[in-house]
Amino acid sequence: MLMYNHRRNRTLITMSVGMSMDEWQRVGIIHRELSYYKELSRHIGPLSFISYGHNHRRETQLLKRHIPDADIVWTSSKIFSFFPSGLFLAGFTPPLSIKSYVNIKSVRTNQISGAWAGAYIAKQLKLPFILRAGYLMSKNIRLDPKASLLKIQLLALLEKWVIKHADAIIVTYRKAKDYIINKYNTNPSNITIIGNPIDTKIFFPQKQKNITTRDVLFIGRFMPEKNIPSILSACHKAHVSITLLGKGPLKKQMIEFAKAMKIDAHFIDSMPNTQIPQLMSKHRLFILASLFEGNPKVLLEAMSCKMPCIASDIPEHIEIIENEREDLLVPSNPDALAQAIHQLLQSPDFAQQLGSRARQKIITEYSLSKNALKESQLHAILTR
Image (cartoon, rainbow, N blue to C red; front, side, top):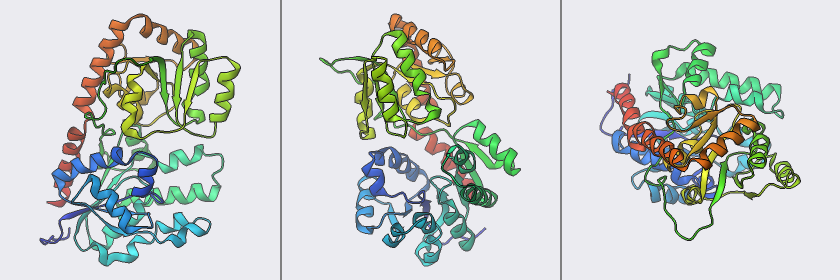
């Protein structure tokens, strides 16, 4: 391991390929993303970021609004946005500016996407490399019907390479750890499970007066795995209203589906993440009936807001929720979902008890401070 001098005091964070502070700001998640890094920096020292934005000054300004002592050490050239696969190719260029990383003591990725740049920089400078694998490319790319065989194979090779070179790997749920162990023959002791961090000071139960309350809230991408037709059918059977927040290729079809079934459904495209607690406060319960998941941050956020939640009884949800103690886990079919909706709406005291226990679990196991402390111990071992 490299012997560090006093100048090497920063941790380099590699953003996903094509992602930037400006994009996080545009889609309303910059506070969600940076609040954890701000907390982490209190434990491990100042941070530097590799960003795929094109305006270095704006990237820096956006970052410093949230983390004043952080900085942007590399931004992408705009030229990559003008030709096919340009954004992907941009992910291989940060190591070309190796002199920009003289103050770096370790490298930590935001996701696997773009991690190859961080892995190569760490290898060049003989620094510890921490891979956060919240999104497994080789697993999820196969669910994309538009993905070519070449793309699938290339991303699998890149994922294998970065996992091989990681000194430590952070995953957000147990099945991800098992997947990496089995697929890449990785030493289990190199993998740490740290769930998605939740800002419990933003996501907390908010009391509002003189508001119109709706019944069910869904937040997520309009994708097949989210099982939205079953959610809408359950609302039809239960005769309840629903609000659906999100975008995706199935949204138009779901709007037509709701109209055809005469469901009281309200569709919202997007809103800043910091406004979502207010939206949650206007609904009686939250529902997530996914056929498969990772460590769904939106479910954790709803639990943090003390919302009674209904979640499909898949392994990833079972890992988060103790059924009928913290929330309800049910089969993902319309009948079971409708029955659970009736149960919560007709038993408000029981629903309130579930919400209270759920928030306590988030505070205990998923808060920014808990997660940052756990990760900082990993950094301390690698950089001592």
